[in-house]
Length: 225
Image 1 (spheres, helix red, strand yellow):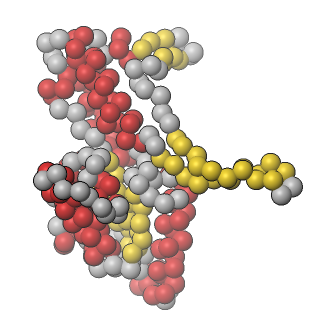
Image 2 (cartoon, helix red, strand yellow):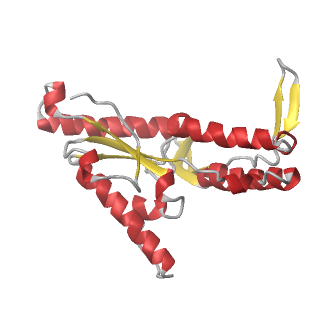
Image 3 (cartoon, helix red, strand yellow):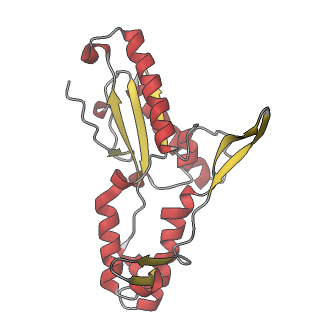
C-alpha cells in the first residue's frame, strides 16, 4: 500500500476515503477569507477588516492553549501549574527586516487592495502545510474513529443552531466552535502489520507511540499533550 497522506475537508469526507486500518490521524484548521472581506473600493475599511479577520480566525483560534507543566528549581523544589500560549495581535505587531531595512505595520501594507488580495491567495495556497494540526489521534480503525469525530462535529453544529446546551467535550464538538466543515480537514497515516512486517499488536503500539511523538512536536490546540 502506498501510504501518502491526503487531506480532505470534513464536509466532503466519504467513507471510502479512509480504510478500516490502524494508524494515526490529524485534523487541520485552514481559515478562509471571502472576497467581500477585502472591501475592494475602500482601502481603509478593507485594511481594518482584514486585520480584524486575521486576529479572529488565524491567531485567536490558537490563544488559550494550556498544558500542564512543572519547573524544577532545585533539590526537591518544583513549581507546578499551567503554561498558556498567547499570541500578539497582528494590529499591534511592527514588522521589520534588518537586511532589507523594512519597517512597517500590517495596516500600512493592507492599504493596497492588491496586497490584501495577495494575502488571501497565499494563505489559501499554503493551507495546512505551514500550520500545526489542531488535533492528533490514534485508532485501530481509522475510518470508524474519524467518522465519530465528524459526526459529533455536525451534531454540535445542529445543537448550536437550535440553542441547545452542549455538554460533550470531545474533539468534534470543540471543532464546531472553531470553523466551518470546509475549513477543517483530516489526514490519516496507516500503520498496518502487513506494510511493516510486524505483528498486529506491535503495529497498534507503534501507532500509539507515533501519536505521542507528533503531539510533543506540534502541541495541537485541541489535543492532550
